[in-house]
Image (cartoon, rainbow, N blue to C red):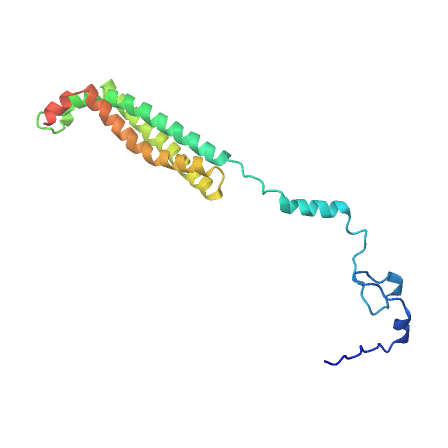
Length: 192
């Protein structure tokens, strides 16, 4: 292997200045106009700048509040309790009517119903309240639970709220007919 000598610069003024050691920057006064400074001004970066930028990488991301999922869960519980209470009351109001209206063959005698009967009126009001109130609360819990699950703002509460919103109509249906048949057992004998 042959050793090639380094090429000497042709600018004598450049050779006359002292060269910085490895890892040092040339003093500003010695830079020629064609050379761009390789160092940022010392005033631009301070110790606090380095500290704050380093802390950004070491701090965990902020946690998102779980309020959205918690509110959806509470609305789902309120919808469930509302539906259960109205199902029990409507079942108690419907049982005497069902005992009078259902004939021996299991058919419904519509002439036995009268608009003046307080049980019919109570059952109608309870049915409307259940339909509108339960539907609004259930849809609210379902939609807000979906949003909470997607946005990860109380995901577990959002999933439970969606499950409650879906299960509430089924549970209230079972409770309504359970209370109705328990209160008026003669319905079974007339149907069977």
